[in-house]
Image (cartoon, rainbow, N blue to C red; front, side, top):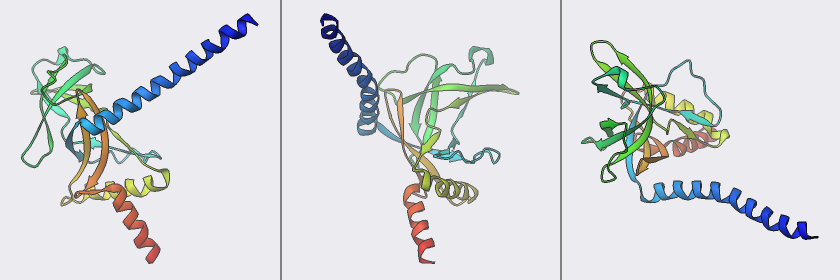
Length: 195
């Protein structure tokens, strides 16, 4: 009887601990979405050999490389901090990179070193933590097609809208010519139903 009195409170504590971890993750994400600064990251064409992945669109970005002075100072997979500014059109541009956390007065995102190349100059390629845009599976394939078509069209501007706060980043949406991709897919499906 005494062991039951001890086991039940321990069970409750373990259950609360298990619920607190995902709750904290959700809370942190919502905090970034609500209070973070929005940046538009212009996307780049995806690798045509990289097939559609089911529930998400694979995103690649234009602004991923930065010239560095010494190749051997950077290691693949290493955490880095990318300081960001906006260009005159409002798109994110890399201001600088650092191995140390950047001053909180600056806009920055925590990322990883993807790889380093060295020819005439050394360049570091950044792997951002927001390279997948998840969608409802029934809409994801059409979204992938719309996204791929927009990247082929040189007049279209395709970008990811990302909220950033204190190094954390949350991908809010993918837009094609200023229209959210979910709305484009919905309009396309409605047009197909009418035809």
